[in-house]
Image (cartoon, rainbow, N blue to C red; front, top):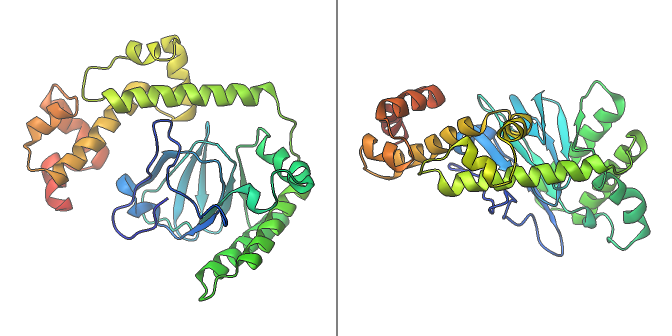
Length: 298
């Protein structure tokens, strides 16, 4: 994630894996103080990473799309996102979400007994995320520890060993209170399905200016069109064509701000053959016309 002021966006590779380095090899930990509203298009877009993530909603309301599930969290609640789980955050107004992203190896070396016995089982389980509410005693303990971790990072002298101490307390609370299921074949199936989704999204991202049909998308993973519709609906809560249209619109929005090209040429450049249809869809997504959007953003 990017915690700079102003323009913010998630940077990923073709598989949607986040490319930013969270910390360093010797200290793989990073703290971020972010407002979802300040990100490009008011969302922390789809991505995944090998690190685990803890997020606290400090202000506002945020929608978390984790794997195939959707959660709406209000201020005072938190969420744990497991390693390699695809996710996206959205907000309809300012939503401040301090969060930490770190490699589980920070807690103990991967070759150690502690890692094998207490850390790996959760990472390798079918648990995609955990929600923490202050109404549940042990959840409240987790949230208070998270706040303590944030406080350390915001202090003048960051104490790494104190940070790791609190992270171990966090992990211990989860281990003691969560029934960790045995790895099942469904976990592998889910990973395979997510990989197929990433391939289809990659195809859309690469070819969006041209003509793309549902059949074209399905052919990239040798699946039926109904199966493709099911995967997009389950994980992205939209259809493949709606995802394509929104992706085109977001690129059009960038061109409106960064170029002087007229609206008709931008529509054609981003895959819209009909300018009227482009304008209607643009207003539906951004709540304003392309021309007004250009004026506001400039």
